[in-house]
Length: 247
Image 1: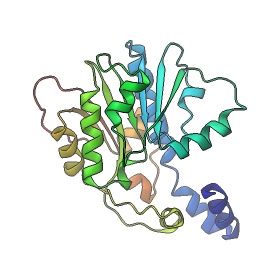
Image 2: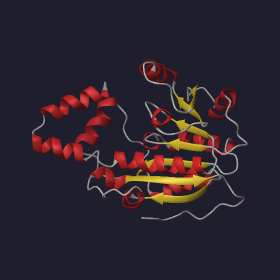
Image 3: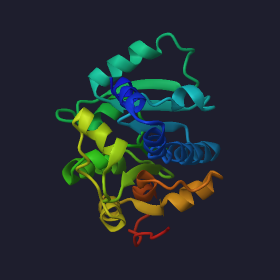
Image 4: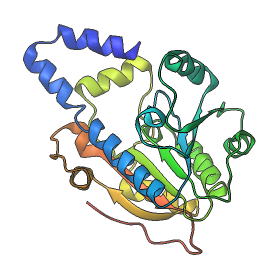
């Protein structure tokens, strides 16, 4: 529904306005590429568990070389049912895919993962992409605590978040259309504080310049590019590190 809505609005725009609107989305492929690269780097070190939180229509289990890796896709039961109906006609996933339905208002994330077969003693790559900016602090804290509980030695958390910034154009249009205002816009210090509070150790906090450099892309010039960040953290090593501060 969202895709069709955006397509209709784009078609109604003049070519000049359409180009500007599309440009506002130019940071998304870079975000995906950075997260993919971090995931594959951890898999290369021997990690064989991946948890994708708020997975939605994530395609990593289908398009990345994840043979021998178990991917737990965590999302609301209704969302998962829709996705499963859509992927039924696709070739099998390249990873061992475990659908993990969680109603976050009723279920314990840690308990649902354990029931699904997730091993909390082994390293896990946690991917939390495009979700945090829609959540208030209590929900973020609860999820980070569950991650800390279920993270074996060598685990990695990769999450995307947005800093406060002006919302305009296609970005504001999309958010208004789905009734999902970004309640969880956070500064670097605020996001890092939540992660450290959960007992995780920050490894990097990447602004757009560093994201683009990591994947060999040009730095885009858009509102989204100016506010999008990717934070990488690991399981606690016995002491909490000072917050990182990178470009």
